[in-house]
Length: 129
Image 1 (cartoon, rainbow, N blue to C red):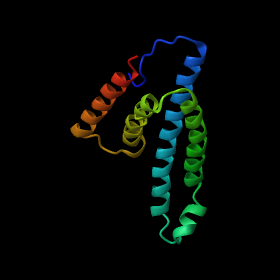
Image 2 (spheres, helix red, strand yellow):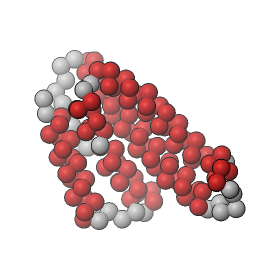
Image 3 (cartoon, rainbow, N blue to C red):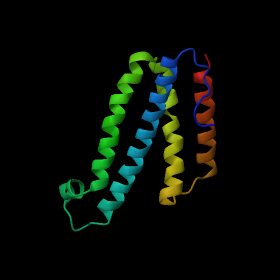
Image 4 (spheres, rainbow, N blue to C red):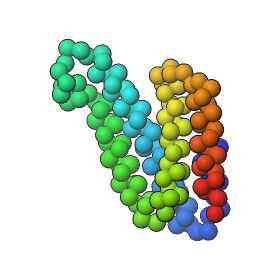
């Protein structure tokens, strides 16, 4: 399970954790777009440093995802303790690793898998009320 099971007391609390999940997905998409942006830049050695970014649609997508994620993150922190929200945000590390495996063919070593398992354990512990 990638998102902690939390017993909600109110509809507002459900929306807060849904917003946190949206933030996690936006951060994950942003990281994957940044990786694709780097691939685009490497495929265009003829472009100078600034052109690699100014002409790179993946870069604009990544920045856009991060911009919206920043706004949602501030909303999350308005109602949730940082000491709870930030560890849960580490779920994005898991999703990025899985996305890198799926979209870019990156290998997941035993150490990567163990790290993912430990992150899941940590998120589970932090989410216990």
